Image (cartoon, rainbow, N blue to C red; front, side, top):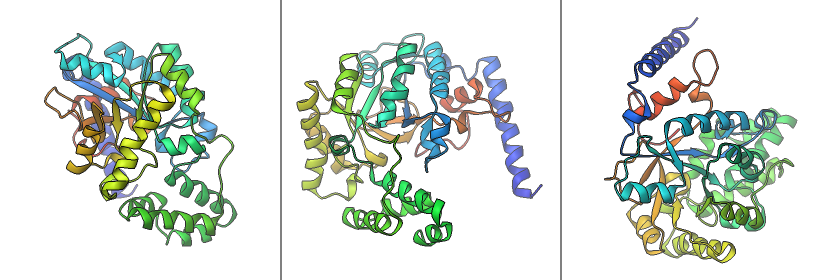
Length: 341
């Protein structure tokens, strides 16, 4: 075994031992570590295992069975409700014995409805869904999925050409670099990747329809905005910010006939200028991808979340671990700061 592998294994042993001990003696119990604070859990896609294996970003996916595990844990240890309701109750000073937790889903993917909603229904959980409006209108994949589908399709045909197209960088690294481009530069890069690799989209992919979103709203779930096109907002000019933030809210209210009070920053990126537009647009809350719990002192437009991934919730035995999940919520695990994930 290499030194690096040995170090990694040693860290896993220490982490899992800490998680188990803390869980057994109650140190990491949510009723203790999260009392008086709002916890927000973030999911993206819900796909069966065989479809997750086909997806370029499996870390963004939980299976229905994994989602059920997480919801059981949430229901047992938290008061689970939508983000808007949870924040209102915290603001009013409620301190339930089981801390407040909101379940959120980003992007508005169709699999949330097809595979996620039945699990939510089974466990009696109402969630908040953040919708990318233009993708919903056109049933079009988001820009990172367009790249992922194109590269994965090319890899199956010609792996060396796919690697060359990414300049021999791992796909996640290429995407992170693309996020630092201007909006026009990134759009041009995505078009070039698709032009050279070929457009590809699996039959199981898609965005939720307006009818599906209306069904979710009618059943008590919350629908919020995730902009119109999922841009990196601080890189947008003032006019684009108005379109993305104000325009998306207006369109959602028009289609759903509902209040749209919560906003999700794409990629978690925000600054004072962006938050000011969100506030002026009439949103009450804004959620980031910053890791952590939310005491009452956290700003309403800078709410932190916990990105829930199946791999980081497993013990060394490969099984989903309640102790490991509790440790990640507790703030006791070293290194869990900054951006979620």
